[in-house]
Image (tube, rainbow, N blue to C red; front, side, top):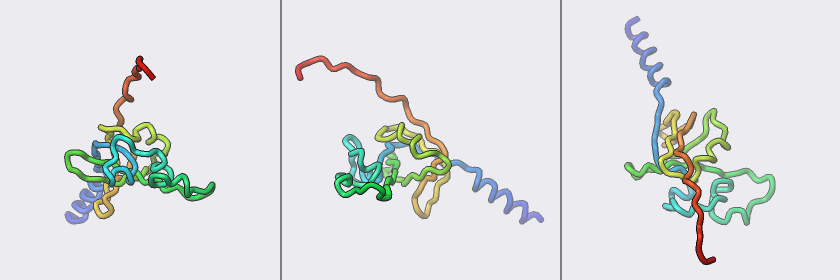
Length: 130
């Protein structure tokens, strides 16, 4: 009985624990190449720079997302889990984004249940020669 209660407690704590990481949220293609400033937006739909030239209507999208954690120098794959993919668009190509969910160590993947993104940068007005 004692072992059964211990097992139930351990399994409950395993599934109840949340995993949270904060870093730069971008496409996996850009994170692997170190593009943190000028990541092409097509990498979020078809997977690589210039892929729209090969894309045909009806082709399956290849939108692999990633979180680059500066302190660790590590890239985590991010898969929405119960979180609609379009909600993550607010956090794309932004720093200090927290991804919260379940972490699978074998595949190095965060299954995102929620996220926290800083507010967008303030709009600025450019006045000068064009």
